Length: 356
Image (cartoon, rainbow, N blue to C red; front, side, top):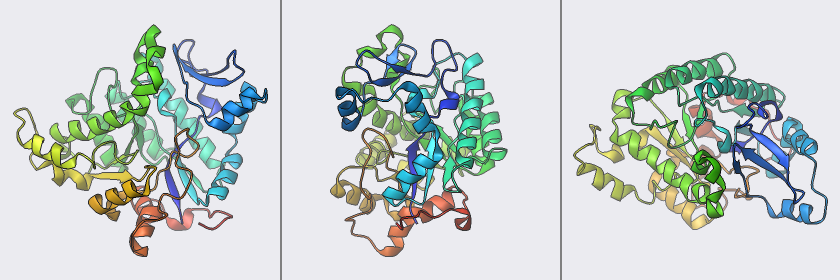
């Protein structure tokens, strides 16, 4: 079995929700359909899409959205990739922590309702991450309980930094951690383009740097702030999954640990490395040598399969291919860790038409 935990789903049902923030899919002068959130416009796109635009074959907005909104089309692509199941999430550009609470709170509910409905059409092969208005932690806690309880979503997807000015070490965030512990589900950390918060200068972010470099920085900041802030001392059962190979955490783990020991302002009661039991990382790295290094350092018990399925920087081959690993540990990464972490009954998962 193969379960991909990093797969975004820009679903039509939660677009066009706000006159400024949208989010919007719009046709541009180039003929391409692009995502806009406030002033910010996504400039990333797969080569095949740019080729279609150059040839005058770009889809309309309606065609683009219809393609994303049909779970059967996703299942066909999963079959081609040999995937049995996915856990889908709202694209990180659309978290809306930067918007006013009067919008971000109902918007999160809308996203979760739409995501749950989409997954219901996925032949028991689609599961969903919930979103929550982390700029309003009390409301976020309520929405986590509703989405993971009433709707059956499998945990919280969250950016790594800057929730309307709050950070993960702020005591105001405790209602979020309490809710996640109560539902016994993890938080999936995926950074977002901080430039979306820059107002009219949002598109001054040359080369999508706040995404391509900044996401991993923010994901590492999540680890650093939560450990230093003593979050796991207050909530020892809290579980966090960091994508993109763990941000920069596995590659700077020793430095982070040694620096933490010398901080005058830290609140953690244990060595930083002793909190690794609260974390999971995936292998969304493009080089087998790097994936092997993370496996050797972190161990298979703490690794998940996440490919950024459908994204512009997605790994489009089997992430476990070429690893020096036992079959037992291989299956942990491919699906067993995900089933345990997300409390999924393996007998409830539909199987892909093309065997993994």
